[in-house]
Length: 336
Image (cartoon, rainbow, N blue to C red; front, side):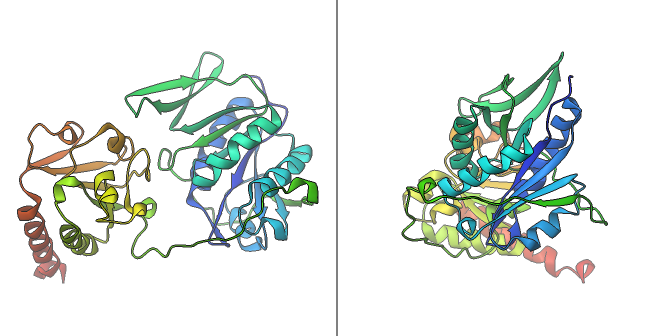
């Protein structure tokens, strides 16, 4: 494939003010594939305020150049400030492609960048391949029933990668790459939106997107009390508690527990689907789990079609049995 005129740039996302988001490492995997095809290099772009810790961490991932825009206006996400800073950085970088994780922030920012740069955008991608002399990007459509392949003709182009769709790049032992600082050059005319307040909801336990094991419940759980039992099981397994949409709508669990097309998309090592029938919208958010264990009273439930292991039975009986079984395993002499 013909070489690009500029680097493939990965946009680094910063969590909690100073932590490099895991989505960056997965996006970096995709960026390397694209850079190889276009015979160019991979760089990173960091937007934020007081980002030295993040920049230092990125130097351990084998990048050629790390571009940094550090400004007080970028301390918290503001769409106009971030877009303006990105536009200014692109004048210096002149990227062939821009890659980012498919997160709540990129869902807002990526279309703005695409419109501003007159660039093609494919969001929520799950894979990359080659077809003849073209690069093809794959993404689920129609609630995950179909995987469509897309090509992009513009340069630059923008791609956002679905979380857990690619393996994160491993950290190296030595630092690498030069650091170039770019001024934000933000003008008052760039800012028309006023952020009046930020509300941060504290999350107890393991976050869904970080969990290796997820224990999720659906309408079949029957009550909020049953979810408290599920939390006991999750704690024993070192797991996060998830849910399909009905328990969220009924107020049994908070909205951040929802897994699915309109919730969090996950791909843990093990996913317990308990009392979940398996609607298309829910499956779209967890089908990439490595091992799926389904428990449902209906032997014809859709969830069994994708499950690796299935148990037909009542969650009211099986959850206490699972807790007891895992408790015995934890307390067995061979574990001590």
